[in-house]
Length: 52
Image (cartoon, rainbow, N blue to C red; front, side):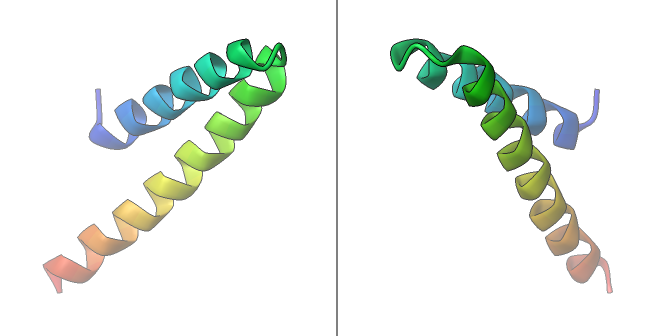
């Protein structure tokens, strides 16, 4: 499993946990998923810049 995928999954789980505390699990999961993809994009951009 790639590191970027682990980042997305962890953000989804954190989002679900926050959503559970606020009684809105599904929106929390979706926000976590979006945040995970954004963090993966930012992190992969930093990796590409380090290689060059």
